[in-house]
Image 1 (cartoon, one colour):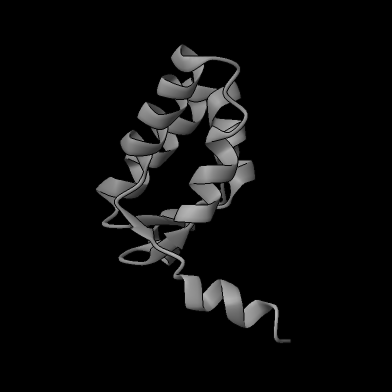
Image 2 (cartoon, rainbow, N blue to C red):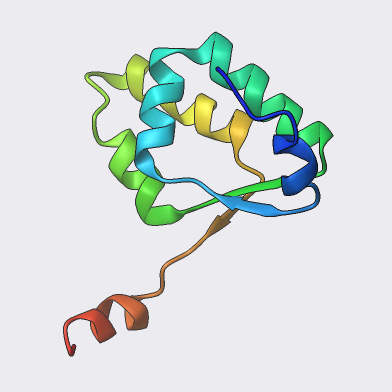
Length: 95
């Protein structure tokens, strides 16, 4: 992974919201991405996502073992999950 020299200093103390693609990439290349996330946490970053993102990522589990592995990966990375309330979903249909 190639990062600009000031990457971590720019992001210091920030919240990062992850999408499904980052979880997919991490599951495909865990060594690279887990190291990256550990560096972010050392940098005092808070790694977040939405519950809908986790649901989308987990639904691709071929069996219980793969599902559990994916869930463990999410737990290892994420510090906080933002829930999506039913009222939020309902408001999308009124747009």
